[in-house]
Length: 352
Ligand code: SF4
Ligand code: SF4
Image 1 (tube, rainbow, N blue to C red):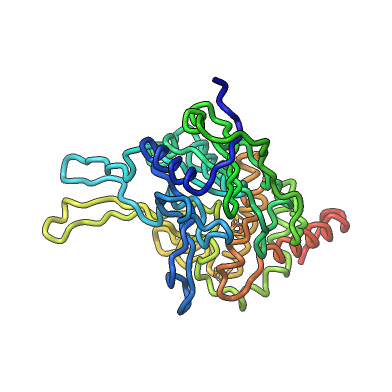
Image 2 (image 1 turned 90 degrees about the horizontal axis):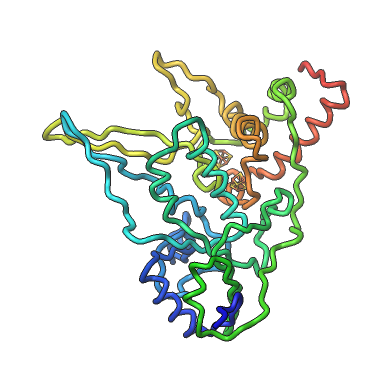
């Protein structure tokens, strides 16, 4: 019997499907945490393991991104004694299926570049979990405030095993991965094909900085000055960012024996004071406006200069949504676009 490529599943079918999938996979998806938000009575939406499809919060953007499944806020890499070490155990014994949107899945491509293709050595601890992960893309039925995936070209993806459109009673599923077809043998056929967003209300003029010469000129533009007063350097934007990967490593030694301990990797941020502090106490970006400029130029120029892979941003809008100072990243990009154009018009020379 030919296995259908697309199916319609009722709620009970979905939960039966989840039960079957859970034999092989831990299923992660955005889940609403009631009262878990930053302010009183505010919820948060985080990627968590789910067992039933009703647990998935698909009508709002998650507060924190998909990267937390692969790189938790803090994780122990290994334990050590005086003369040996032992690798930490993987949190998940099974393979992992993650439900997310096209922009979220595209953000993992950027994470892959940074952890796996940044030089000759792959990041071992990223790779050991990444090799276990497959994706289920969720159709965006409505767009969220501040999304601009269409401006970034991250509104579509082909990196998924199944695609799902959630409905009140009927859920449509497209099955792309041969390995998944076995789970769908008994469901009703449909002609569903995932629809990706074609346009966002918010449009961003993404600046293109072609070379180091232009990057150096834009560094000196006065547009960065306003952020010295506005940005408090809290790092919320980068923690919530789908594509940021800064972390710090810390050796924790146990109080009763300082030769025994564990090495942890913890999410950090280029926006934090002292993030770039070096031996001798010097720091490269003392002013918060310099750190903000660094963050933006890394996303717009530095990442692409290294990987030739486009911007380090998928237009998910989480950075602006999390900023307590209401600093808009898309507005910064538009200002930067205008500044780059201004410099180009002046023949590439701008000494300010
Ligand atoms: S910079 Fe902002 S919009 Fe871009 S990926 Fe990060 S959080 Fe999303
Ligand atoms: S831009 Fe906003 S979220 Fe990011 S460090 Fe500055 S104040 Fe914090």
